[in-house]
Length: 146
Image (tube, rainbow, N blue to C red; front, side, top):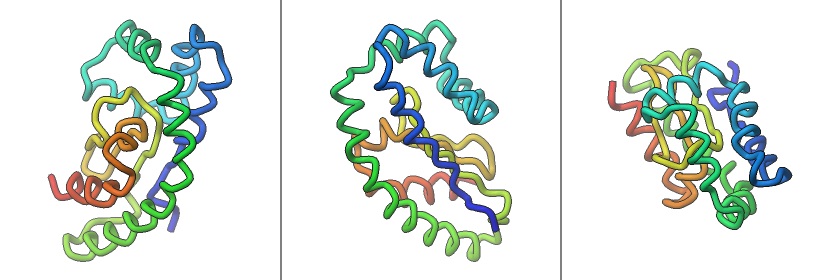
């Protein structure tokens, strides 16, 4: 079975290698890694390209650095999330082969979004603020919405 996680969170932090003026350009290139998921996410947040550009430009380098320095701790919570999701799938007869959990750097609004019945979007910037340890609970709650 292929992984339920599509973790592109580390890729997001390449943004730190650019001058801040180029961050919006980087973001628009970065979202091409998962265009459908990001399109659904941008729709869910109700944000235009111009607003995305302003939002990304408002990020603070120090805050991104702190999140990036902590990102390695996320792996253990991904494992715990997978365990809980497999258990939930058995209870609710969910097809795990259809499930995709996108773990990405995004626009720092909410930590998780339900994109569809089998797609959950996790923004590590927002998740970092509330604690990576909340990942399993947030994902399971999102999956319980259907």
